[in-house]
Length: 317
Image (tube, rainbow, N blue to C red; front, top):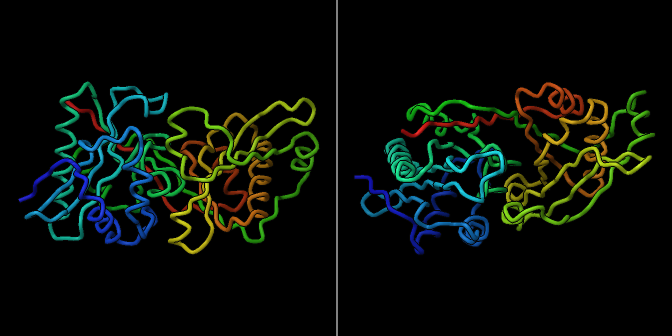
């Protein structure tokens, strides 16, 4: 019999064991440690133990699901009526699917007792308040298509595919910015400025990135120093340990949507050049599947599609 209960203080070592026994995948940083889990999840000021659901079979931990209720931790674009289920993990046992189903059903039951009218499976449309740098690479939103368990779970429980992003990766060894007439003209009028560990813009951002080193790159006009766009690069230390190279993620590619394709290509290429000089070996980013301009820019610069993220939503009646 599967029993679902709230988190208790004796659970972290068992949760770490559950995490580390998941199949090696692109979506989870491994190995996990108790100190890392506490810093990135349990010590967040808005963490609510009652919403971290634990599944047990005959007293043994068999799975976990984290329900993040609405409130000030949600991005500005999301309404307070939306709940978020960023992660669902089950042990590698024959009853894994039943464990996942029990966890989702328990989460939905909690949501029905609140004012929330819908639930997101896999994370918000922006970097979620938990698990950044631990799950899904450079931005912990949606469900990875390569995570077949999560995709099948969404299908079983009637979640709809709302939005999607392509996950891109590029090795930076030997990278050189492209040189053509348009890029030379852009270099005459534009400059890229770098700022290490810039101030946080709000409380939520501080809580998400407090354990990561950030670098902000700004595209400015040389004539009047007017800023056209910004990119934030975050070191992904947990994934770096897993893959054996220094990895970073560009977390806000959407900010380039206001640039022309020439400006965006110049800005991103110059950012990659500076990242290469500081020792970054691999960079990951995510681009909305319907953003043709950014898709062309990143693919022109040698990024390759390695996965896809899907935001899954369900109306709670």
